[in-house]
Image (cartoon, rainbow, N blue to C red; front, side):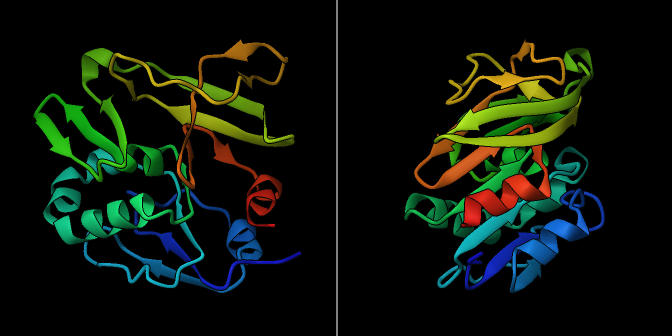
Length: 192
């Protein structure tokens, strides 16, 4: 199995913390950065992995690190490969809205996420979808959601019973983003 030359992974104590060790091991040569304090060098990165977590709890720090957000936006717009799961997907969106206001994120995906208390809804369960002839599996756990209009999904997502669920899978250039946290086998399919 071929692995990317260099994978950058967003990671800190809570905002981008939902990542399995087996995924890290499968990605080959990895380098971590903290989107709250670091500006990643993406020039020769083969893959940027933005795992899930709770970015909605760290919005002030994420907004303050504008250079990081701009570097990621530039990387995505120039065709860089990104896998963004749940919190990572939220970070790529236009903004996150809370009861305290609206916080700009990377702006790669033209969507708004709500983390307002009145909008909270639990979405939980195993997920499966087919994209480009490959099956991807994972799970979903979040309370946030998209503000209208809902984004278009490039794949129908199903739960463990095979029933369709409204989870969105987005593709933009070489960006794959969804609320679904992909299992290790699914991640490795993306880098083969």
